[in-house]
Amino acid sequence: MPDPRHLLPFGSPEGIARVSLAPPLTATRFPTLTRFRTGKVRDVYDLGNSLLIVATDRISAFDYVLGSGIPDKGKVLTQLSAFWFDRLKSVIPNHYVSIRVAEFPPEVLPHADDLAGRAMLVRKTAPIEIECVARGYLSGSGWKEYRQAGTVCGVPLPKGLRESDRLPTPIFTPATKASTGHDINIPEAEAARMLGDAALVSRLRETTLELYRQAAAHAESKGIILADTKFEFGLDGADLLLIDEALTPDSSRFWPADQYAPGGPQPSFDKQFVRDYLEAIKWNKQPPVPSLPDDVVMKTRAKYLEAFERLTGHALDSRT
Image (cartoon, rainbow, N blue to C red; front, side):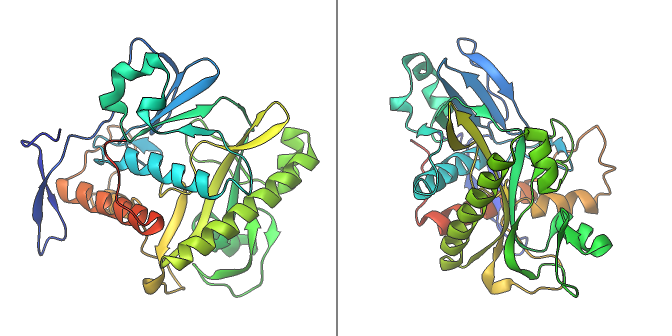
């Protein structure tokens, strides 16, 4: 149950309501489970032939996990990924098994209260060691490269494009997976060299672009522009699977279509408020990491929830 003592402001400074929320879950400790990996946001546990991926409420910016969590952020990431895994399974199979705690293995059930709504049981795969990025709009690191060279990951683009312009056709831009710091964009030929399998990279490209096309069409029907997104894939024997997360505000740029104005940065359904605050306080992007004021936390939470509800058509389930 939410702790009634934990009150945080919600909304704009001009009209702040107060809501009662459970404190954000920023760490998990399950001594009876074997920890497999700890990421910036997710704690992963090894269950033998499967993995338990627990999305915490941690939030990172400028390559550091911050001192404040965003309540319900992990539930948004888990449940939105489950929505997309189900919706896009006709394009490619995925590792998703269940987010219903009652369907998890018995050894997990003692931790049901902490896992409800934010944990995903998945098949174990051998991850493919590149990020597969689809870009439909010119933004982020792609915009930076385009200004310098007229390309994105070596893909030539027409002259005269503006920041946030829609590309003539979506492009595939792989990247290396970085354990710390930023992923590094690479040309497709370099991805083929790294993996030693040009045919696999070709398949990854076609699958990534088809996933993007179908997801972008759905998002557009909900008044949201999917500017770009990244996917991860794994192998289960000879089977290629979509893994990790899918089309969340952490892995994608979602823009409100009714505010789209190319020629500069766009408002987005992600941690924009967090980045703006950190820039405003002139944080040097080095430890110690700052914590966030309540209004920034709650505005960020609101954006994640709005994206979830608009894309899925239903409210977040806190008791799955």
